[in-house]
Length: 99
Image 1 (tube, rainbow, N blue to C red):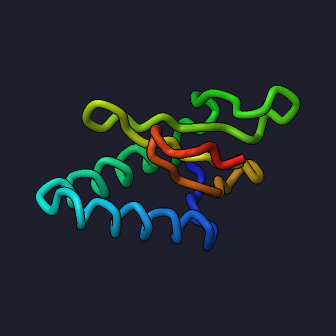
Image 2 (image 1 turned 30 degrees about the horizontal axis):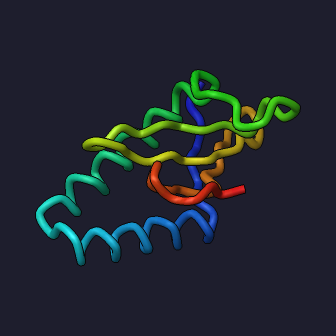
């Protein structure tokens, strides 16, 4: 079964914010970072249940850890139904929590 991936407006804003941050710090790494995030999220089309639970009482709320350099990113997502995954937020691992 293949899931459709959709990004919420908040998650799209997170990606834009991360892009803006990286472009000021390391222009050469921007494309690589965004590509890494896209490839990792693409994995959710087939294996969303393989990611760790973000909440012990809600098995549909999960986190995808995305390694990149010395740290990486974390994507918070919800398995909406048997055909859809919604990415809710994307953060750098060194950022404050998204809860």
